[in-house]
Image (tube, helix red, strand yellow):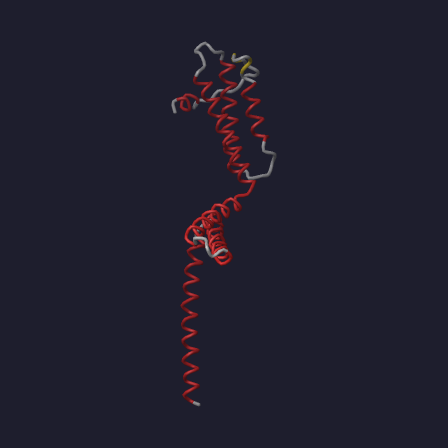
Length: 187
């Protein structure tokens, strides 16, 4: 009886030791994962889900190549997890930022291509548009609100349209010029 008790106690001690090791590994893994951003974690989760789906498919359809299915489904799962995490809101934000960058580049190119005899009002108006767009670009990357997608794009298009009529530069208002305008042009 005593021997059985010692044997059971030894088995319990072994289980406790193994459990402790497993918990330490889980803890270390959790700590490393906590340093990752959530997009990475969603990608990992998607990859594991894809791998699980490959196992399931291989059980249902044993003739398929598990290696090919596991790589394919894991890859799709990783991409799907990241895209799921980003969601529509992130896609809209990225699209607005890209539209704004294009508008900023267009205004800057127009400023650089102005003839030397262009009235100061036209230059000032284009610089005002440039500043407004760059301020909008900064606020787009900071502001994650769910406003309509075309708001920033429409402002950019109106600003660009206000400066040309049949390809000719026009002036609508007098704007303020900045000391750093030449610095921007030299970039």
